[in-house]
Amino acid sequence: MPAHFIHETDFREFLKSLIASKPVIGPVVEPKSTGDKFIFDDVTSAEQLRLDYDVSLVPPKAVFFPPVQKLLEFGPNGVKSCINPREQVLLGVHFYDVKAFDQLDKLFNDKFPDNNYLANRRATTVIASSVQTVSKHAFWGSFGKDVKAKGHDGFLTKVQGGYVYETFSQKGEALLKHGKFGNASTDQVSAAKRENDAAMDKCQEKVTFTPAEISTKTRASFSNNEMWKELSKDCFSCGSCNIVCPTCYCFDVQDKWGLDQVSGERYRTWDACLTEDFAKVSLGGAGGHENFREAGAQRFRHRAMRKLTYLNEKLGGPACIGCGRCTSACVPNIANPVKIINRIMKG
Amino acid sequence: MSPKTKAKVAFFDFTSCEGCQIELTNLGEKAFMGLLDHIEIVEFREAMSEKAQGRIDISFIEGSFSREADRKRLEDIRSRSNVVIAFGACAATGGVTALKNHMSDYSEAVYGKDAKMPHLDSSFALPVSAAIKVDYSVLGCPMSQAEFVEIVSSLLHGKEPVIPNHPVCVECKKKSTLCRYGQGDHCLGMVARAGCGAPCPADGIPCEACRGFVDHPNQEALVKVLREKGGLSEERAFNKSRIFTANLRSDAVKGAGARKE
Image 1 (cartoon, rainbow over the protein chains, first blue to last red):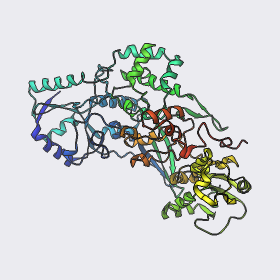
Image 2: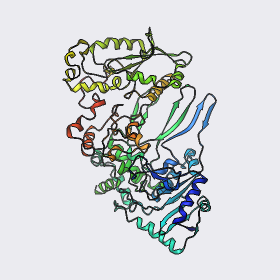
Image 3: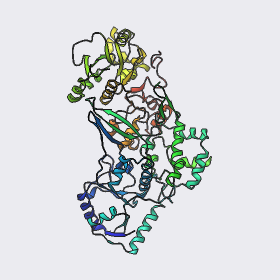
Image 4: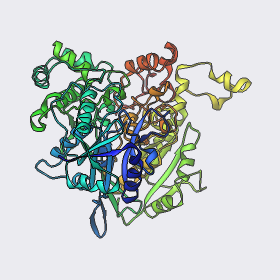
């Protein structure tokens, strides 16, 4: 893969040119925070972009798979698709979130291609960037560390004096024209590698078991009802751990009538398997319903199963990329996967 | 309901501030007039002086049931209506009016020497469903405009309205709203029924659960979190959720639940 280098002093001009050419989405400060919380949003000036962010509140999957997405409009004249992707650059994604993109790419292309996701995905150039600040609850340095990030178009690593920019696709190459990039030297390439390798050791939270050991033990713990009850005692079934998860991909589809009562729209919105009604299904025309995960402990267990074992084979690794967003989002402090894994392994 | 004939809709009020009816007039000209192509309002004292005669398709009832003397009027509305909808927090759950249910000294505190006036003689504040069968509820204090439109639209199309049974946290997280607990504050969002779009936490204000609880709120964990993470005293942590959910808590007064068929 070709590696390029851009000096620190030329980086701002590169960003300015890029922003002027097409919409750029990147990590910026959440405006109501004290400067310590970040979101992915449209970047309107080079100064706004914060490549030194730790982690975003909502994962960048929202760029392809928005929290609320209009699927189609209907009316007396029929139905109209709402697929309307924007050519854009998503800049500054950390490698663990790229791993999540790779999983979503597989899942949304499995059997029935989901064009509402795929169209946005294809129209977006994804440029990853090195982790300059490690978030407090991250554990990507240990858990699933052998699963490599893929599916991005380029990777920026901050090194002494500038950035090493590796490109993996033509979309990634296309960005070169916006800045004074030169070929990266062997020293610069190895400096970038050292930088990214060193980040792996900076996570405060660590998982000491392999994904395979965890997968086997988690599956074997399915009937350990006492353990799931104990782990979920303080759970509100609020779904926060799902909503902030970069690999959660469940959604609910609803129709909404317009005020004219003859037209309307169909939309989908992120769903959360921790919430009570997630597994509630209709029993058909005669009425009534069945909830096949009625107890909070069952739903808590289901999340552990999904993240640690059920999807491993299909995805080539655990469906948890160690970002720690769920740990931060959980009000009663029970969603931390490291704690859950350690409890499961204890038996 | 045939789309050719307009549905007859009426509004009635009981123990409440009538703010939910006012909120309906805030729906805005476009939305309100749009709906009027499909419904005919036959009684709505905040906006007209006519009274409904005969059958009503949809009755919206605002306010809680807090006086035995009101039962007859409620039963009369029920018998004349095809669909009865509790309109706003007080009608749906008792709302703030149910705050009186665990107190006894409020009359003197509020009304002083007039405390014994006969019209102030009231009992527990209960949801309308404690007196008559209620088909649907428009939740919120004030009632949610979007939910009002969703329920009316659903009824016009013969569809079940979709009322969320997940908490406000879901809506905050989807919007990247900063969690109150991360800001040294407290919040009831984890047990509060969503559907409002979580505007309060987005404005930096804790959720007070004005739409009531989700079906199965973890009340023990709520008190624990309010105390340990929200920094509330033991007593305040215990009482905190009463403001809008007094009749939904595990210590609700007898009869606060829905009327048994």
